[in-house]
Image 1 (cartoon, rainbow, N blue to C red):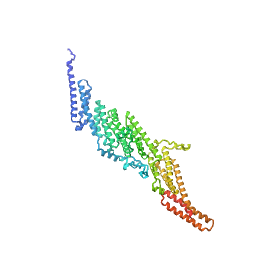
Image 2 (spheres, helix red, strand yellow):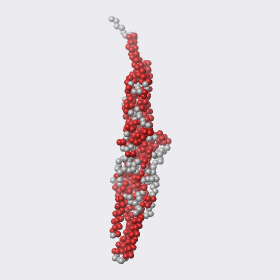
Image 3 (cartoon, one colour):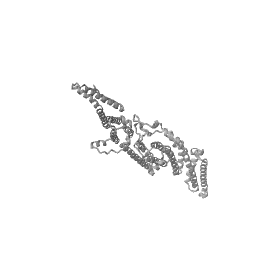
Image 4 (cartoon, one colour):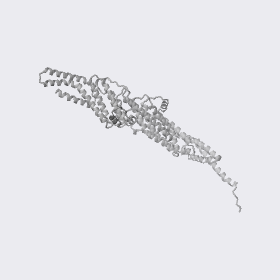
Amino acid sequence: MVVRSPGIGDLEGPIAEQEDLVHRRLEAAEEAVERWGSRGGSAAGGGGVSDSPELAAAVRELISLSSDGGSSGQRAKMALQVAMVHLEDEFRQVLISGTYFLPPDSLQASLHDNIALPARSFSFSSFPNSEALSISSFATTTDDSRTYCSGFTRESVSMEKIHLYLIDPEASILLMEIAELIILAGHAPNICHVYSETRHNTLMQCLCLLGVQSEHAAATAEDGCSMQLDSHKVKLWIQGLKIFVGTVLPEERHACAHIFGCNSMVEQDCFTRATTRCTQQLLKVGNAIAQAKDRHYEKAPLILEMYEELAKLQPSLQDLLFGDAKDVISLEASTLLGKLGEAALGLLLDFLSLRFNHDLDEKTALDGNILSLTQFVMGFTKVLAEYNGSINTILPLAEEEEEAADSKERTSMAPWEQYVLRLLSHLQLRILERSEFYKDKRLRYIFLMNNAMYVLEHSHSSVLRLSSRDNQTHEKLVLLVEEYATAYLRTTWFPALFHLKWVQFIQGKGRDMMKEVKEGFKNFNSAFEEINRVQTTWKVPNPQLRQHLRIIILNQAIPAYR
């Protein structure tokens, strides 16, 4: 039996069958792509890859066939390229349609109505100007808890409203399926570009809807110009920072992890490229505010609020970012934090100098009531006390020319405590200067006593958060009030009571000097009537101080009159 070796003719059959199979597979895949593309994808009711399993199978078939050589491989690559174009367009459409927007005005209103801004114990809109400073300008509370503007609390934030400009969860499922196919086909850079550009535009729009005017602020900062330190702009920036870093960026990272979870490098790249420029714009707005030159000391709480919120959110911001972008953003955030600290320090020192106009009004000049400067300084200090932690970080230790012992004691105190003590010292000097306005020494001491008592009452409040060393300040103020009360008693009542003591002296001698006795009583009555006529209009607003004055006057007058 003769055995023949297989010849070329015998191999042509299987090879031809294999080529025919490849050809049919290629045609079927091309038809599936063309059929799906002609329907316009999910945008035209095709349902996307979730409802078109033959499309996903066709793309995988083309990926497999494109690895082969020859004309079939080239043809598969061309068909795959067409499929990628359709899928990228589908990805973009789903990404846009999966982000639900309200009209800008409605969205901004809903966000502003539902997101409360911590206002400590003051309202941003209630800051007085330097021409009308009054303690009544502050909406203070009786406890140390933070209050919120418009009566909202943090729990009242509607997350449903915030999610309106984020990616819909159902859309992210479809985006994930498309992304897997595109990444599998080796077109990851393309989908990164589509995602990052689309989401960048969306997030920039989000910043604008939150009231952060990034373009204007960025141009202002770059040109070296100075924007105005507007309370409303600062409030919107703080609100935007909290929402963007606290909600938008974490949600964006979660979306990237879900959509591009099949490839961690693509996930990080998409998130970084979509969010970096938006975050930089947000920081540029803060930078422009920090560089505003028309600052006044009453805006210090605004800058301190910005400083605290940024310092609080900076660690979260660093944890969210990746790679080089993390280093860049961290540096820019740290730089902004330093500028805010410098701006706050300048405002605190401006306030410490007390170099602003406070003219005594007619009412104060007539009745010896509390100086408006005293009321404002103590009220404003109470507001600043809410930021004592940040102030301790911002303020350097005071370098004053003092005796070694006192200097050693001061260096052991927190900067905020040093600041308050220096402020009270400066305030006391200003009160003494203002007291020279009163020509009547009796009214001058009433004025000094009222102001010292007001400072005593408010400086001992727990809101100032001073250490136990505050007891020394308290004792000094108590002694000062007593000193002024005694001086008032001497200048007011001692001359009147002297006439009674003169009568007592005459009677003690046993002499019959009725005329002198009557003259003494007459002089006392005249002095008493003058005191009553003049001092009835004088004010001592503190009830405890009024009672104290009554007691010390009675302790002197009653025994002498008896």
